[in-house]
Length: 379
Ligand code: GDP
Image (cartoon, rainbow, N blue to C red; front, side):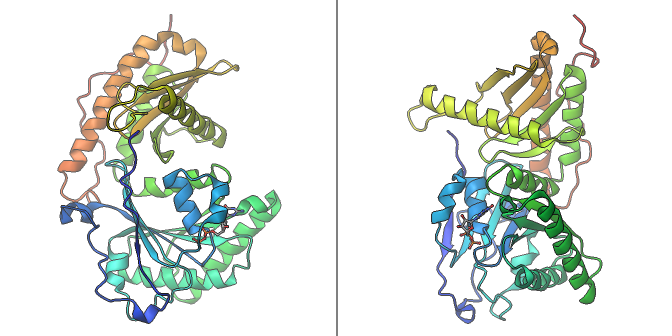
């Protein structure tokens, strides 16, 4: 199975901020042949206090670790540069900063840390006293904003599996209010923070990461548009474009996402990949659990069909539709091929574009063919 370019790399650190070398290479990624392309990669920083759950999030979302195994993770005492290079749409880095580092020491090169950063995810442990975390959040956000005003600030109110529904809401309200008040007191009312309730024990962490990643994809409107067109012409109710390994959805159509549908689609990917890796034909070098032949169909007992198709090496389309409408599988498959073609053109446009981070590709002209059907598939 195709896996991430997993060149997780620990930078040895002895816990003393002052000993941190200023020349430390925050710039290009290790192993990156082309510095230019490294500049294009949106970078996600993952920060938070010690034991807030940063390493667990990273392992569960990007390395398929099961949540229970995170209990045995050693506490982070080094900066982890984790290059997630799994598709041309999802390319980013996670820097896991040990919470105890006082990285406001002059040794840190802030321009480099925050300059190329697309999103800063700050993890707050909701099961712990969070006043300290809020102070650190304020420090980091204001510092980062001074360097780079385009950073998206995302606060994960984490480990909410331990809280009841009411306390979750109360906790979110309280953290939100305090964080905004702190920013306002420091004279930074203009900074926007987004809040997400997360836990590694359910799909909330994947949902939250999907939202974060989507904000960094400048082609999102084009992708959404293509999914809308596909849905209308194929009588599909909901469709997600998934990054297969992480189960982050990088785009969906414009109808609202309900968690149940998302979870169903995630489970379908797991089932398809697991079955395929067990029974799939193994290639000589690596077992290919997901390739251009990959497709899967699951009929549920409520008259709904889940349909998965490979879009490219790393992306899959997962659709939910009514069983009656699946009678027209031929049309759906034809429309899917047009859709896949169009997606490839979006990728190509992006690759041609000099700076995908700054150039927005609104609605690319795609010549993937004309989709069939008018949204009312009749027998
Ligand atoms: P780090 O120091 O920020 O990297 O924190 P770790 O990832 O090492 O996590 C610290 C502890 O929190 C571990 O024992 C994890 O199992 C636990 N943890 C992480 N995420 C969650 C979560 O969503 N819910 C619960 N209940 N525990 C979590």
